[in-house]
Image 1 (cartoon, protein in one colour):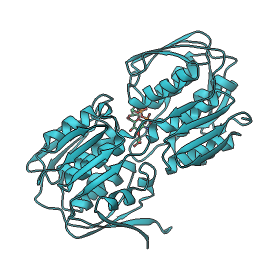
Image 2 (image 1 turned 45 degrees about the horizontal axis):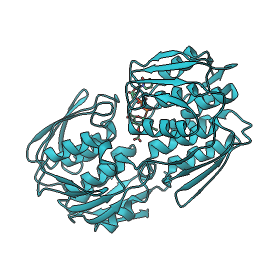
Image 3 (image 1 turned 90 degrees about the vertical axis):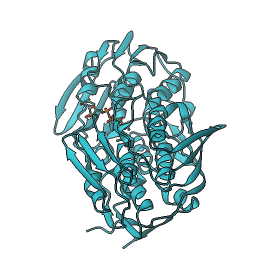
Image 4 (image 1 turned 180 degrees about the vertical axis):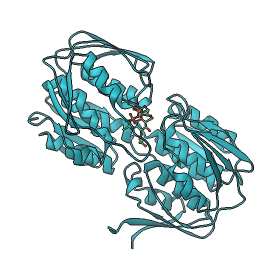
Length: 420
Ligand code: EPZ
């Protein structure tokens, strides 16, 4: 078994102090892919130093780009792109690699991208991405686990998504910026990360209307200018720290947030008796001695985000009453339940619905992370649990949280990273 890094956490401390949220991983990843749309020198600021960001930079380097990340500023030179393949070994570690598909076909007329394969939380097919690009005139074939896509020049088309896919919307929006004519995306994803990408594309010279709504219209242009853009703050990281303050009955100030991106989470967390106040551009969060139960159903934005389901469930394990948590986006996003039970949580699952019966206390235990947000959920539970917990396979958490143990330690948590 390869030696994996672990967290040792001693629970029971109330978190106190101020934490600063990093830039959004799920905004930075499509923005990095968008640099392929224009052969220039691009600059992205506020980019988090995360495993997934390094993986995307490695992929762009393989395509001939030159990436350098220093203190949150990512310079990407795409003046000499000379390869068009996203290999399986990269794509299987990060599905967001599929975001290079649209830009490569739009700018270079060709792409060879590995099918992402499944992942812990679900099958996560990309059929909608491929349907849309075909509607835009791309010739798509599957060979040896790879998507081969080619097009003389993409043409605008009307595309309807029966599921508002986030990266599907981003892939098509990017491809459409250089297509001939008008593309209309119906039932588009409305996430803030889609809006941030659209903002950057418009600054590059793209003609996009309706980003953030369910219908996005893109008028293709001949060519685009370099990106110069600051990435929005990570609403899921911010929401995770709100939950950390709540579960430890602490009092935390969270800086570098856009509260308007977190309405559903803030509304829901207030129902648990957690106080959330805005102070300038920061949030001040005060956790209750014991949270009240609250039911939640994950929905596409602006609904409650699936990426916060596991973290919210951790909070509900100690609520004074029962909560019903329904996951509607992914078919297998309850991997954290079995691990939360090891702390003494009482959770039963019926299909896509988990019933969490709040218990008085959690007890520290050795647990194992299975995916990015599940690992955040286990850390939250360990911060509340009495005694020592060990969280294994924390490489999952490093994909989406920049230096999380440093940030938590600065708030008074007893947490350290170690190798067996
Ligand atoms: C994005 O993934 C995020 N990743 C995910 O965050 C997030 O959980 C998800 O959106 C939902 O909000 C990035 O932005 C890099 P989808 P994505 O396409 O785009 C089905 C994290 O923790 N679907 O919106 O892959 C799919 O199976 C990650 O940071 C199809 O059936 O999600 C899923 O059930 C995890 N066919 C649902 O739609 C398709 O072609 C939503 O998927 C595409 C999607």
